Image (cartoon, rainbow, N blue to C red; front, side, top):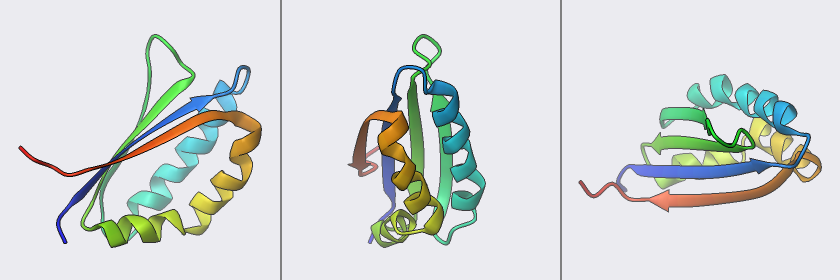
Length: 96
């Protein structure tokens, strides 16, 4: 299986931007230490601070699926309803 790129867009609920940022930043070191993680980069939109984006590269889709079951991801997901308005995840194949 070939490398997988993930682009994940997270939008914070009004008044929850700081909390979402704090919780997302907690995911970075734990995820970067996972098997198969090539990079896991968090970004915040300069013009709309409620919009966050993860740009991730994984050795395989199976590595990413294992990441989605990791305790730190499950913990974030359990809190998400109270602070996150929207999430969109795109599984991308590198083509160029």
